[in-house]
Image (cartoon, rainbow, N blue to C red; front, side, top):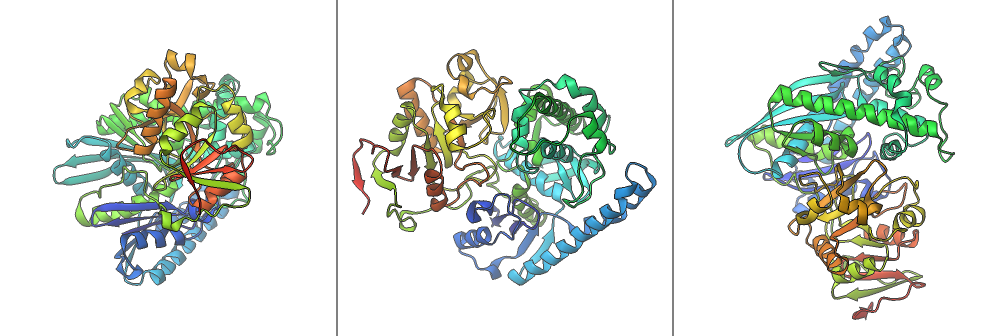
Length: 583
């Protein structure tokens, strides 16, 4: 089963073979275009090549949307003609939904041409999210049968924006049943994206920047406005279309109203001064989203009776809201898959089709290192102009030493991660003990806003010494409160709201990263590092050696490790290590 996310944003492909998720790749990591919407040709080709398959061997192509459901959405737009606040947008909405249906059917024809021996299957979008979240969460649990609540919150999947499902696991398989839907126009993802755009950042890309900015604002200023904009009720929540107008699937239609602008501030232009009003607006938005997410999680617990919660959808990338759920919703365990946004639905679609055919969920969905790796024979290190490359015998020890000295180092190791966060294989590492490291990272390496925090990675066995989360967080999905020791010694990883988006690591999950952390602890006494993605602002995480070398040459990185190759700019003093020069 080849799963595809294609034609909207965050294109990706995933492959299930004989009950195993063997790989998943986001196309942006290979073509260099962030959030690309093209058919994921390079990703699909790599997956088939890795599995030793030809296109004719694909039995099912699973698509992460159901185009027919958009046609139904077009018809359901007509009643909005009767409401004053939505009448102007009703017909454009209907037309836009019909256009998406038409485009989806055209993609199906293209898929059939590429894979002539396969059956093309559409998978409802929220089902794809839910199955992936569930399958990834099951991998993180014990083998005892039981129930899981699955909560998916995003901007829009056909007509659904929020869904709650109950998964019952028994020794014979898994049964997933939808118990509640919330439909558009009630949408947390729509509102968050609209405010992100209003504040001058890219919708669908920089919502995390708004989440970080929220820690610097006072939510009280706009708290009444967001209580009205996103009212909470027994079934979930709603959206006031007088403030956030009815959705039309076109960039030409604004997502905030004149009434919203009058009640808040004029739209901020990208790159202009960030004022207190912008911080307060972000704070009120974030506070309301956290409240709604906790309410939805509690509702999921009431409706399913489950002790474990699996979360998916783009809003599940709001790590502060996930942290609130862990604290307040009453679940024993909360899991988020490594790729909760739309890129992960390629895996979800393939997993869904496999489950329909066998009654069992394929294994491997809880893994995050599912993309390409590069052997020595595939990597040529004839130094680029201005670079020097040497091979080193003990890469982990070398990195730990240089990090302790204050260097900022890029790491390109093993298989490519899936998801929005680098998890050690395509990472930039730095010491959290150096007081200036955050400013250096933001100003000279990542080229991003100075208020944005950096996440810590910690050996799982020592996590409780620094963070209060009380559960594993292997995919850097949850903002945790911190201990007094962290505040006293590692303040650089603590955001202004007192939390840190922690990644916990074991030697089984990532042997190399665990070795680096242990070596760093032997030098400094702390098995904690700053871990951010190997990229600069506006570009995707580096998926190829060439992209990683570009990151080194275009940023203030001190060095780059690609497998056992240590690469520096010629102006940087070569490390004193036992090494062999490149041929």
